[in-house]
Image (tube, rainbow, N blue to C red):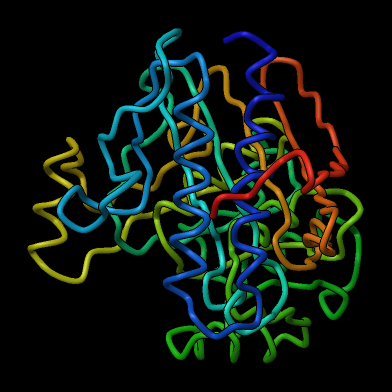
Length: 318
């Protein structure tokens, strides 16, 4: 893929973030999400790509725009697209932390076509070839092995966990060992990425979240390195039937990082609200400031971009 596409991706997430930021703290998740979707779709359709949304806002009958299978772009190289125009809709509506606009590109067939089901995820900044942690191991063993590898006390290990009732046993197991927990309300894409970045104080991410978000996080990890595994979780036969439609037939498979996202991958995220990974949008009547991160797996390049947007020239339509 043309390396210039990476910079084009930043424009896509910037526009979505600026649109969503108008609705921070206003209590309406749907309006905030729709603004981000509209802005992202408009930006994608201006790109010189032949893109197919493989991770999107939902099935065609559930999502009017950016649905799975939707074609975007003006023509060009064929790419698969994974996106979340507003990762953290509830966060945005409440004015909380860690909301982002997120998108990733891969060559045709580069992403797991994950259905919109739950995924068990584990990630950390450890070499994948050493098999230090795994979903196949119980959580306590993973924590002990991670502490041994990092040569730190178990009590100093910090695990990031989504604050959900379904995670109560996970929380109890972590605390029984004396390890520490960083609890987050939403936004597990940024949490997974933060678990592998050297300057963040998260040693491991573990828990159950959305499968589409798992693929997006894997795209970023393909660019920056680290370890990740995911296992799709199905509540009923209907969810299994949806998985079968996208050629997933092994319902117990544990997916490696390379099976979630592979090949030449580009990833971009722009902060909507302040978070551990990115500052949020700052605006006044005349100007807007955005903070983005863009990555490319082919070169391992990671860029942090601060954008200053002149609203007298650049009109926000959403």
